[in-house]
Image 1 (tube, helix red, strand yellow):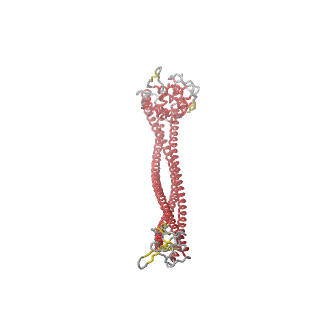
Image 2 (cartoon, rainbow, N blue to C red):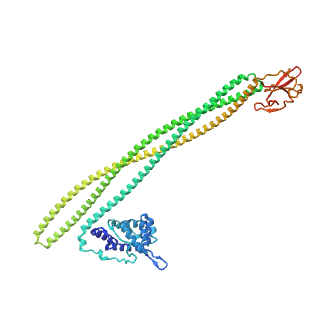
Image 3 (cartoon, rainbow, N blue to C red):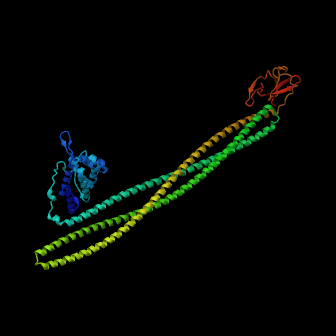
Length: 600
């Protein structure tokens, strides 16, 4: 009944005009038959008041299996006039027919046999192979355009009764076989065109996805190149700054060293005649200068090494820029080649589709011709039997039989001519098939070439990734060099502080020398009494000279001692001017006496 209702609905819709309303009788009968098919073998479910048996449960599963069915389910639930699950199921069937997706929805249900087993018995129509046959027949309903009003219709209280009178054969049906065959051929062509459109849509969507992915990868590469260029510019600026800072540091150190050298030479000439304390201080200053000069030479060597390393880094960065530009050019060329290959593939694919369509049409024509030849042979056999019966029964109608024989002979000759023509057409079709096979071989070769280009592109992307890793390594080296420069700057600052301390010491010595230039030593014979206590000098009271004022004191009056940073022993200080007193050795015949004189 499902086959008859679907077939009758398609035929009547084609004769009526393809757009159908809800009042159309064959359409109503179709929905009644579909309800019976879905109810066949349905399990009885227990409710609070009575047993329930509805088809809304399995139809509601389609929403989970097929995401596009969510709109139908939501609209059915929102309809105000529907109160029973059967009414919702009827409204769902009408909306699915209007969407031309009833076959797709039911096919998803049939595939999931485990889920259907919760609603149907094992012998149900939807669980058997007949369910798949009905779903295949429902694909033909995509030809029909239905315009149904579900909102105001009372679907809860409808009674589903099948009207068998619509499916009984009549004389008109026998006469309209040829017309039905033409309609079937048209429907087949329409279904074929729709399937082709679906395949083309799927290929177009996949190509769009590939284009999007390629564009994203290209934008990422461009951004990475821009970032690399900015980093290179920043590194160059930092190199220039470091060079300028190094030159300034070198100039300052050279200036300080020249000044210190001049001061030391002048001081050496003035202090050649000084005593042991000044000699020790001078030797210490000289030793410090040697150490500082060695440190300066080490720093200069390290600076030269760093400058050479910076030159090498700059050369490496320039080479990286050249490689990146060359790879950009190759990428642009490869993109152009890809676009050309895509255009060629599209043309070859269209040609293949046209050739396949022609082959299918020719195969259909051959099948039809074979059917016609079989029909003609059957008709010839029937005619021969009739002729034999006519010869036995009617000897008097021999003349009429001869005429009929001549007519049949003419018909057979015409049929033989048509058969020869069909054989020629078959030969042409075979040649066309050979040509199409050659086209396919060329297309396969082109596809292999495209695969090779894709593999080359992948290799180049790997090389770009390796270059990125090398660039990261160079950045780490640059950071290490910056740290070394900072350490060297700290060492230079320490050297400068030490130089400033030594310079201060030398200035103190200069001031002491200047103060001593105008003083005159008193003779030991003339100084007999201490300046402060006015007592005579003796063994217990030794002489002490002030280096500032030149006065002579005894050891009792000049007991004030102060430590000096340059000498390990404390130094005596004058009470009047607080200057350092210098000890002088006096040799006599009996003993050695020591007296403290001023440094001048």
